[in-house]
Length: 437
Ligand code: LLP
Image 1 (cartoon, rainbow, N blue to C red):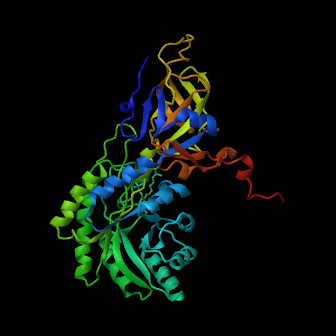
Image 2: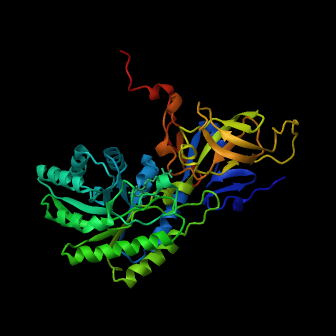
């Protein structure tokens, strides 16, 4: 027997084996899969709150607004957890605004990021009374000024600067280098601030940056802070006061033995730098997404078929790239483990497939790119349920209906209680907005 213990899932708090059964808090995942079907996302409320608590510990005694970057996972019940915990929200669309207000988010604690806000979205956000727009270009400043004036308002703005720091992460999720579409170039920042300050429809309140995502080292954050504080000095010397400094999101999580700094340890270093440079009392903001929810969720999927082939064994499961797009998009790694591990005994039928083999775990979508894990040693049979780990961030929020697959259901576990927080989409749901001609 291979006995799995809680220690077998490092970096996955509140997700552990007990009596050979994978649990999320007090719920057996095999029971949830039976009751609700698969694919099924299951989240731990305690894991989200403990990830948030690490930031809160790090910021004790400071003026900090934590704005959850809701693009990571925007289920209403999850937004509600963070709203109740006092968080603000980083949004990037009118859709996210509508969603977070429906979940009880405080508009005054909302910041609106993104390179391409439409006039309609600006109006919607001004009407709602959001806290601040993070603006990324001179052209956007001009449009926001016009929109605000036409509504008889002043829009609070912060300029997103591009500090030109290498976050050492996947190129698709790196945003703070020259050549990215994001932010205002370091050397153009002062000019942009002067321009913003000259527009009567705008009120300059801050400065912000976001250099990328899944960052597992401390140095890029420290370098970014240095560059940001240099800019704050220059901007304020030009007579433009900045109420807050927003350091964006980006802290990574453990997918595959990654060892990012803990949020409190990271911020101990960053705050020491802020103090040393005389900005320790400044209002701070951060926009974490992945690090609050990523390791708090799993995706359950059932093994449908085992398919040996000359070069590879395939384990065909009922979740696919439409449910879990990260491997196809970024060659991302997610651990895959059984919810009810089999003992290592069993017969190998001589074809290398059966109990105990190395598989590519793939979905039913008609694309070779539809894989969830490659070369995984698994002891599985058809009908077994597997858990794809670290699936709390950028999975369901990026899910699609490709191949006319309804999106998965979502469960929030709170202790021994399991709440269905999103129903499984039916085939009819997937074409409900279409019409025959
Ligand atoms: N703030 C801004 C302006 C952002 O663009 C992002 C993420 C965040 C905050 C939150 O970053 P986080 O703390 O989650 O790293 N789909 C990709 C990740 C894209 C991140 C986009 N921006 C993935 O699955 O890895």
